[in-house]
Image 1 (cartoon, rainbow, N blue to C red):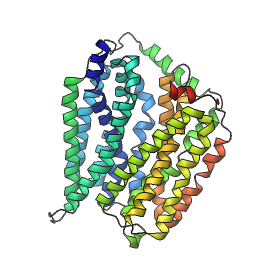
Image 2 (tube, rainbow, N blue to C red):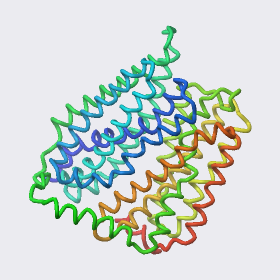
Image 3 (tube, one colour):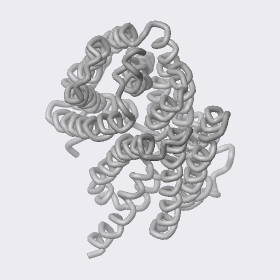
Image 4 (spheres, rainbow, N blue to C red):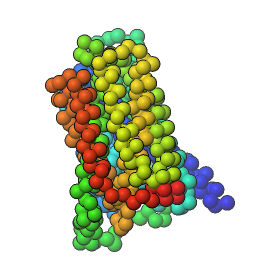
Length: 432
């Protein structure tokens, strides 16, 4: 009876908590790109400055022990959601101003920091607030809630902003008004999350402040964590694989939406904001989810080593679709949506291998900390190529840029040849 009760209570906070975890990341990484493009910022500046927003996720391993030691996970979650609400409100308030780009970026960096910190606290709280059995039982629920946040952020929010852009309010600055309202809506959501979770989240007995830990012991453990990670077998190959696996995608991610939005005269496809929201936030996300589900299913059958080459191809070869779109500049929404669906399906399928590899190299002592380091390096692998992608695109044009993206996937194929992976890994990881 108590197990059923525990599940019933967990339903009240697990889905909403992981929806709240996914939404800020999507807004910072994807929605902001579309907003800045519609507000007239160049591709160079969009790619450079929004890529800097990856930094809190890159350096997350350095302050994750602080979240684990100071205060409770519950406190960190509540405070960060209030901070996120304030940060999104700050973005909304700065959009109509003259120096909106500078000031809105400052608030988005605050949001990124709050989001990365919230990620640490939520994942820790999940393990403290649920029994091991219920942790396993709710894995699919939490992942689905996170995906719904992606649909909401990349789809409904952008469609909503596009509707406001093209509404009957034709006064000057209508685009700024549309995005200001959109970010006020997001801010309001996080105020509601703050109030709701402050009321509904349980107070696990294990969620305690670790006051007994001294600074000397903390420092020793902290540096030992990094020392052991960088002493792993094949560490150079591991680092190169993490940084190069998404080299093409890291560049494509920042330019795909501007390409879809840009006028045909500028080499783009000339879609509206709402059309981009539908393509990425509904068709694309659904394809992404199915790709991820298939990736997990087949990995459980034959393991990571068997599927890694197929998944590497799946995440990289569909980049050729953007070469096709840039040269044809098709006006067919069916072809455009189908192309994005194929690319996103390949990404969902191929990303499975990447996540499994991060789990694989994190095995052993300090598993949680090593996984945090690995995901920080993953964010760095997206941040660096993303920073130069806008400058490069404006230098050589969309056609040549997408060809370059395809060429830049080659190093990942080369480095994968040198990986030493246990043939049995993946079968147990997912099946269990």
